[in-house]
Image (cartoon, rainbow, N blue to C red; front, side, top):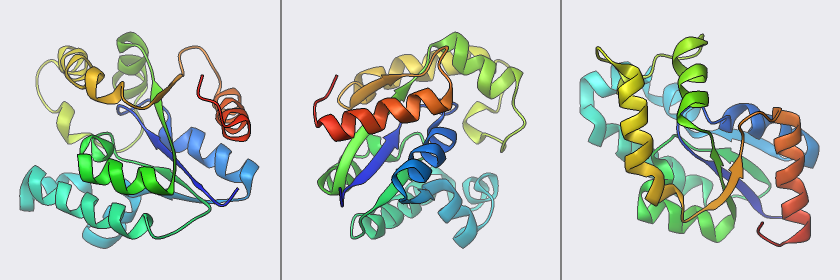
Length: 173
C-alpha cells in the first residue's frame, strides 16, 4: 500500500496494542510517538516537570514532522498529538488516520482500574475518574474529525483486522 496508518484517540483507547497488531499484519514498522519522545528526552512525567506541557507538545511536533517523511509505518500517536492542526495535516498527508474510541467507563477501567502501564501526568489529582470524563467530553469534537473505530468490547486483533479491511476497501465506515 505504501501509506501509513495513523492511530489517534484518548489515552487507553488501545493505540499501542492495536497498532502493534496492525503493523505485524501489514509487515509495516510500528512507531509509538510517546516512546520516541521517551527515548530522546526521558520519562514523560519528567519532561512535563522540566519543560511543561508546551515543551512536551513541541517534542510531539518534531516527531510528527519526522514521521511525515516516511512510509510503511503504523504510528501510534500520543493522545493529543493529532489534535494539533499542523500535526494532523502533516501525518494525514502520509496515510489514513483512525481514531480509536472507547466509552468513558471502558477508558476508566483501562487507565485507572487496570493500569499497569506508564504514569499518566494528565490524570494526577484527587478524582481521575471525573477528569477522564471531562477530558473525553472536551476532546470528543476534536477526535470526531477522524474516522472512528469503536474499541469497546472488541479484542485488539479484531480491531486491527477492521482497520486493515478499511484500508484495503479504501472506504471509511
